[in-house]
Image 1 (tube, rainbow, N blue to C red):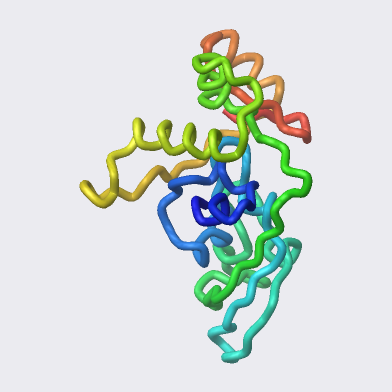
Image 2 (spheres, rainbow, N blue to C red):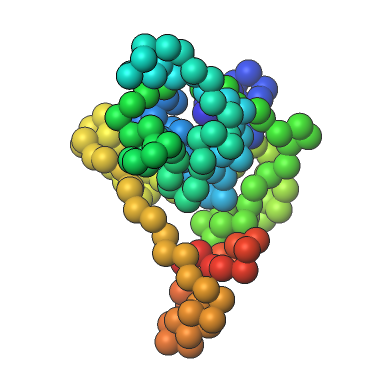
Length: 179
């Protein structure tokens, strides 16, 4: 992520400091602070471990979902244990627009008074937020964070908010809500 910014290519800054490799990123459809890999994904190359052939898959073929992809699926059409990702191609947004719709980033904007941060500032904020939550893996080994935020119906969210008015929640385009 830092390298892309150093080249003047913004668009991945919200994904800063996610532990792992580029090749593993599509498997989990990694995401953080309002951006998922699928939002920046163009295609990938993989070796089919059954036939030994190289295949190229686009986003549709990868069947990205929330922290999910075809690489985690078993059964018909699933590629779990059947592929080795060797190249990932990303498409960065032009023109670049900041993704700021996450509580931690909104707090940083309020704290700093910066309502229009550039990509490097967002990168710095995300790094600081992550470092405050997790130890440096170079000092203390850790697996990062691995979880799925529950996705509930709007009705369920209303009920939950009735019991816990301060619950952090994000409406999704399909009408459901991520907690």
